[in-house]
Amino acid sequence: MSYKHIIQEAWLYTQQNKKLIYWYGFFPSIFTTAVGVMYLTYQFFAFKKSELFEHSAHSFLSDVISFIFNYLSTHADQRVPLIIAAVIIGTVYILLPTLTQAAAIQLIARHRNGQDVSVSDGIKYGLMSYLPLFEYHTFIKTFGLFSILFEAAFVLRNLGMEIFQALLPIFIIFMVIGFILTLLFTYADLYIIIDGEGVMTSVVKSAKIVILHWQKTFLISALMMIIGARIILQIILLILVPGAVLIAAAYFATVGLAQIGIIIGVVLAVIALFFAAYLGGVVDVFSYAVWTYTFLELTSEKEMSAREMSARDSTEG
Image 1: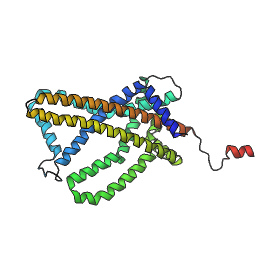
Image 2: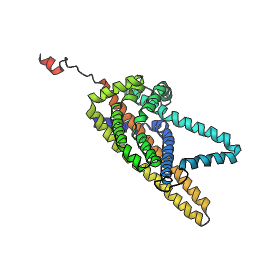
Image 3: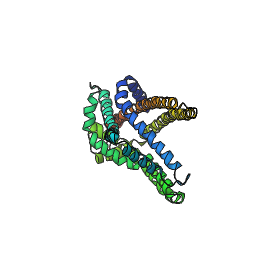
Image 4: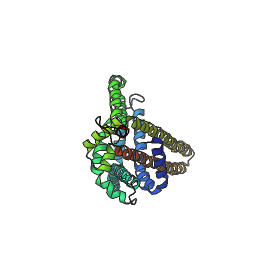
């Protein structure tokens, strides 16, 4: 298996399947990118109002909850629509990324095997493996790097530097364990989606195939991390654009043109969000294709036992 050929083939497939990018990459990426930006914004202001910086009497979270409660109290006519909208957005955010991942991987695998399937067929295939895939994602997020980092940030923000330093070795150990488990479980979601295996069976099979082909898996993982890091940098730069506009909006407010500044800021923020979501969608589909092709190649190779003779030795005999 040539990893260079795999990556080239996956990129060509991504470029030739724009509908797959739009439906199974771009749209879920809008929600994940928006939620990611909001979460990072929350972390920034939570740190800013913590005892590390401002020694504020109230946490940022309590301020947000108070604002929401007061707004709903003074705008009774908007309670039901806002609650319904929040439920819909939350449900879509929970369901959509997992469903679209399952749908995209199914389509990519079927296309590579010469099956004639349309983009819309991905929904039914995605639904068939949604529940075990959602269960697996819930399980693996516990060991995810970002989960551990956010837990460390919570300790630092709320319990202070001394306790954080005392717990730092534990966080580092969990990060190392999380990295190893993430690497071992590289192909678990593919076993769930493509082969219809259960969560624990997929985890065990993934660990086995990673151990047998650890060099190829590690090399492709490193390449995908480099590609992902470049995209994250681009997204950060895009997020800085609305930030600069908000500064300009503050200036407009000082000269009595606040509405113009707000409108410009909102428009550019939406444009930046959509562009970042599209980049994220392209990377997601490309990543699905790389790992699907790798998985199909590795699982098609028969592993010889120690008792079997190689083809060369059997011919010579």
